[in-house]
Image (cartoon, rainbow, N blue to C red; front, top):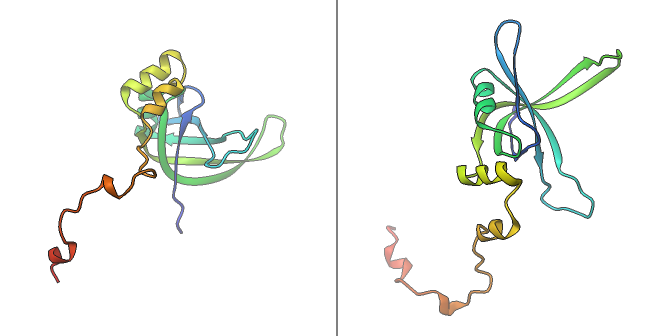
Length: 149
């Protein structure tokens, strides 16, 4: 069966690293993931994640609240009973890999004073060529002459 998921977002709190009774590291954290198409009043998706062993220790050491992270893994749904004896379900990503999704400098700026100001993030936006016309481009040769067949 295919069960792969990749998500990018910001950590909503510092990751919590614990040890199982057998000494296995486990890290729980939540990612806030913005929706592609927002309507007024739309909140981000809040996605629970769990990482085990070396992944847990790595995330606990290098990621903090507000860090931009990419996680890949599998989606897991589990059942449990809460403190009041009610049956509950939890859906979470079991992290197989994690990636830094911003530069160290950007991460430090986010940690120091919240998220980067809009003017700084606007400078990093991709260049748009929508307004370009034919005079902005040059012909470098006949492409058909370079084909090997």
